[in-house]
Image (cartoon, rainbow, N blue to C red; front, side):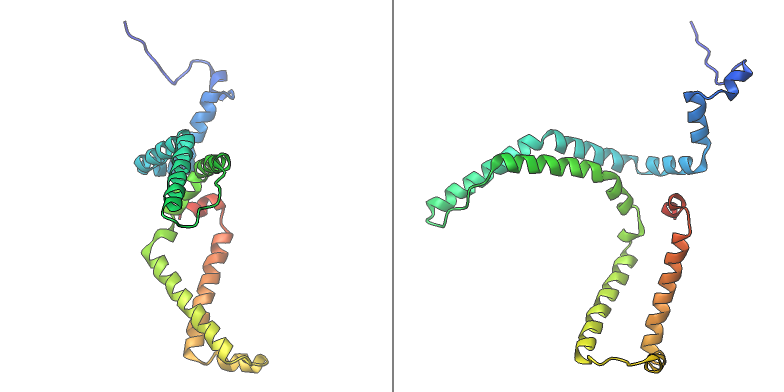
Length: 194
């Protein structure tokens, strides 16, 4: 006994009619959908792990909150027996509710976390650049605190641009502004792929 299955139909109306199957085929033919599915398949192991972890966390939220509450109770009891100041009372019901909300929030945040993990934010070069920028902000704040006057007027600002460090910093900011403007001009879905 064999069954023949074919996506080709005899009726021309079935080919042009809106149906869930035709809608699915159109969506799969979309390059953006294909790229998104490709990326999902590239990270299928990580996505499966995240989904399993979040699902397990959400399912066990009550057990986890009970364990945390009993741990807090044990620590309170030990602290009291050692002559230390007792801890304030812990509202176990509120703690349990908070853990459950955190689990739900973690499940809701999973796509955002996945996007951040696959973005240039996790690139070591980005971290180095942000560290340099942070150091520059602190140094600039200290210099501004030491010289509260700062440049006065447009001519003083123009003279400041002759300083090679200022020119380099402005050039860096101009390149950042250009890249931000370019990304703002793109379709948000296509910008995510880059």
